[in-house]
Image (tube, rainbow, N blue to C red; front, top):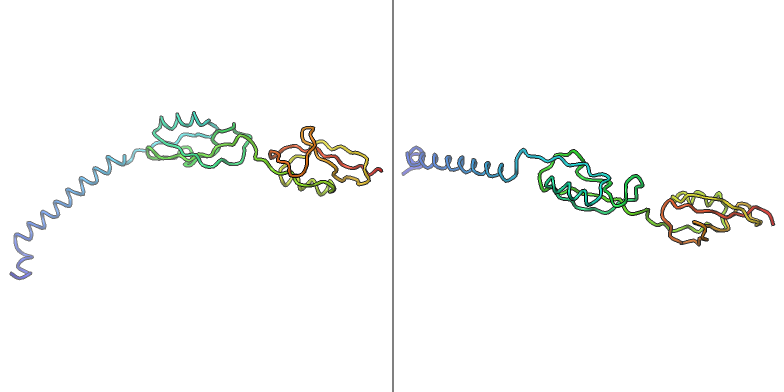
Length: 183
């Protein structure tokens, strides 16, 4: 039997029709199965979690069939309570599928600690920008008799004498003791 006779025979057309029918039926079944298992067209709106505690977030996400994962905490933000959410991804109002992970960044319990620089025996003019660059605040300035005018002779925090290298929380206030230029 030649190839041309086979391609025009009834057996070939029956087999071709069966193959096409099988592909169409199989495609229809697979598409229906995908629609059912992926919840096609069904979305959940991500709630706004900023400023909420971890316990509240857990309850709210479980009610919406969502999960959460904590990421590293960020720098302390005084506008939010301690250990509350300050960032989330995806953002509030986004449309996601159920069981999607929401990534959270929490507010730490306080500012990170920074080492106090050695500004002793430096002028106030040199010491001030160095302290401000490390986000320390300059508090009360007192003067004592010393030949070096406006030279930093000591540092205090909350009434206690500080030495260089001491760790203090960011934005702490440092009081300075300066020389007045008198012998």
